Every structure is written in structure tokens, then in C-alpha cells.
Image 1: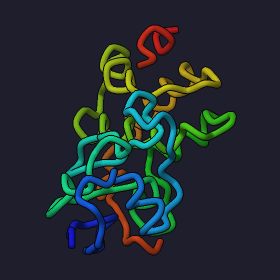
Image 2: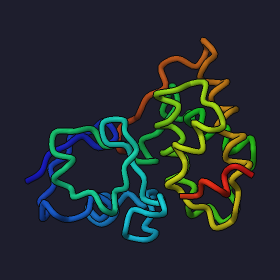
Image 3: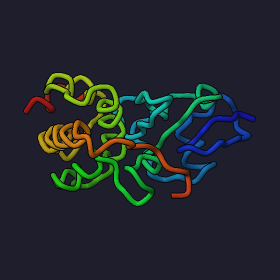
Length: 176
């Protein structure tokens, strides 16, 4: 049994310790927001937070999560269970998604960046997002959404952004 916290809930899973965290999230826990893309940690579609750090769940064994906090796109929320996280709000405002497949990973990487740095420069954004690929090429919209979310997070009214219970390398392209 491997025990960890998933979106604020304690969870014990009976899984091979080498099983990728992605498959535990999708197949055992049945949360479908985290996507499978490349299976090699190169595209970012499977990004989740492990103790607040953006990681690629397709190459992270579930044993790495033991005793830690895992947050998926389903657990990323605003001040209440019905609020979107400021990054999600900015994504909507800027009409970022086209096909949408990469967006959960993009949002998770962006929210991890903004948890550490609420005033990122374009270079900070490029570095933080360099492991996330968007086949539709929405990089300028992604950058603008991150800047908009940063402005929102820097305002005093946005305190207490948190997670809610379970129930509820494009560096060159990004610079355009």
C-alpha cells in the first residue's frame, strides 16, 4: 500500500511502486483531467504538483508520492469549491485553449510558477513552461494568461487560493 494525499484527501493505493503516478491517477483513482501525451516526460500533458512542484506524472513512479501531497487539475481551485483558480480564470479570459488536450498540464505548470513567483518576467515564463508542448501553438495566449493571473494573484483580494477535496520544451515557440 502506498499512501499519499491527493487533492487534499488521504489516499492509499495497492499498486506496483514502479507504476507511473499518471496511471494511478487515471486508472485507479479515475481522475481523467491529467492527460497522457508522450509517456517520456517530454510534452508536459501529464503535469501534476508533487508537494507544490510541477512534475511529469508519466515518468514519476507512484512510490515517489508516498507521504506527499499530489495535486491534479481537478484539485486546483480558487477560494471556494466552485471557484476556478486564477490561472484557470485567466485561461478562460484569454481564450487560450484550441483543442484543449495540453491545457491541464499547461495550467499546472503555470500555477506552480505563480505559487513561487507572482511577478514573472517573460524569461521566467519561458523557463517554467519550456517542458510543455502545445501542438495548436497557443503560446502567446498562454504567456498573456500567465501575466494576467500573476496580476490577479498579486492583488490582496486573491488570498487563500488552495486545493479542494477530490470530490469536487517549447522555449523557441514561447518567445513569439
